[in-house]
Image 1: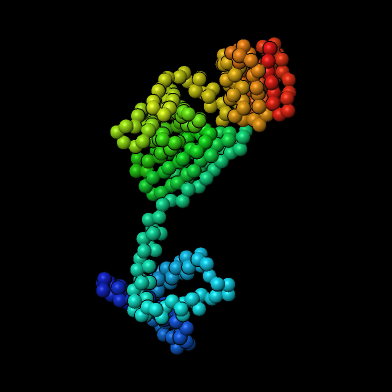
Image 2: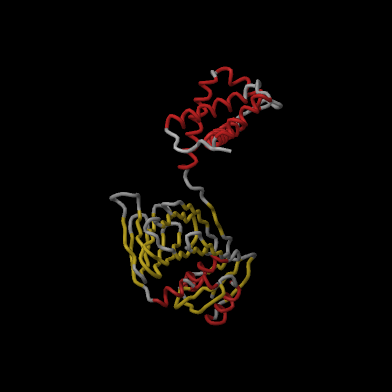
Length: 329
């Protein structure tokens, strides 16, 4: 079978699209018969350009029908009956023109629509590792929720709550940006963690570089370029950067191994950290006890072991009250 689709000019393409639209419209009128079906088959067989134009507009028509189906329709009404009510209002030429426009608009929308976001979350005490198509990796800490949108030009992650570790495959043509509230972390070839709390954001840079911007996009945004060992704390109005020893950063990443590491840490702060990983909560009953200090490595989801250590090492009293553990003098 010969194919006359090569070297089509603009006028030819428009004429083919118009004819394809007319055929689709005619199919909806209720006057379509066996001879019309044979004529359509012959026209499609003439050229791949005919087939492509017809299939594109047919897909556009199908999407139009799906949109119409979302509107309230009298029970039992058939699409053919809807077509017989609608299409006589327009001339076939006008209807065909409308369909061509709809096909073009649909093609534009489907090629330019925003990327679909994918949501991932962990429960209290949970830990999940995500391998992205670009070679990057994200680890979610306890009670964390993120959304990811990837396109050919950008990679974007929204940290809605919790903490995540990012091992990013750098691609200057596709920036990797983590958004947390008004703060944005842009990868410059990086391994880093982002922890979102109620009134502040903590960013720890492990390897490479990253830029932290805090505030609305524009001249008023506060920013800092982070280097390995930098820990940034962003609040509503400030970005403060300090340097931490490698061991401190390693200890802070203990959650990736399922442990919490404390070094001369106030008991109240250690209890607060344990409470992120457990539904059984630790309550420090008084100010004196809260300021006592503790060190060691503990399984993050074994809060009873932490309470036992506080009792044995610090000589404190531990009692259970419902689902809480109360530590006092």
